[in-house]
Image 1 (cartoon, helix red, strand yellow):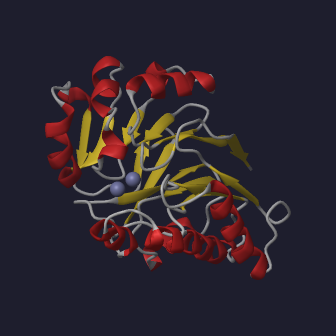
Image 2 (tube, helix red, strand yellow):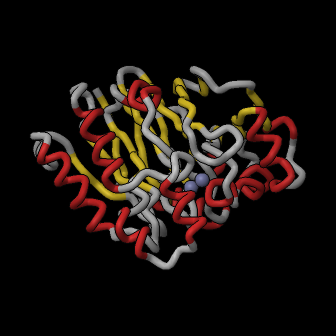
Length: 267
Ligand SMILES: [Zn+2]
Ligand SMILES: [Zn+2]
């Protein structure tokens, strides 16, 4: 009775996460090419045709660019909210309607033997969500493209064994970097992305509940962050709060262009 997790890619150039029990295999987002996703799954010994469903966090290109291929070529079902589907459908092309599961809200949805919980987030998309997955007593959370940290987000993820949390940018790098002002404002706004400091704050809050053993930093910007900087910033915040990465929990990175570590949570 275990839940597994692997980040196939995470960042502004594409996102796709794998969550699975021993019987049910899910993808969160399909923002890399179909070929990349197929090969990444092979890398962890999963045949793409055995995936039972895709969930979308929101409609931005870095989360859906491979969706059409996955649905057409590999016949993967999609679980999506009505509002998100309205804006995704024109970008996906013709698909078999039997693969489509459209919901008004995604709340406590069961796919196979995995319970999917969702929380609304304030990112600049029509109906952005983040997800937590429960199987037996294990729980995994995926929290990227957040905008701000709400009570709902903390409440949804407080009892996760493993939490993947957005650490998009270093605030100084973003402010002094070469992005145009409107983009800097968007990223820093409550509809943009969480900074390294924000990720550290969420990790610190979540750890207070005593469940979380793995914190993975995600959706790192290529322009406005460095993996080491994100890691050290979050590590510093956690250590200041009295939690030592490597002892009290594991702190890891995910990657923009390659498969991350494979985690298996069993209790
Ligand atoms: Zn994104
Ligand atoms: Zn986005």
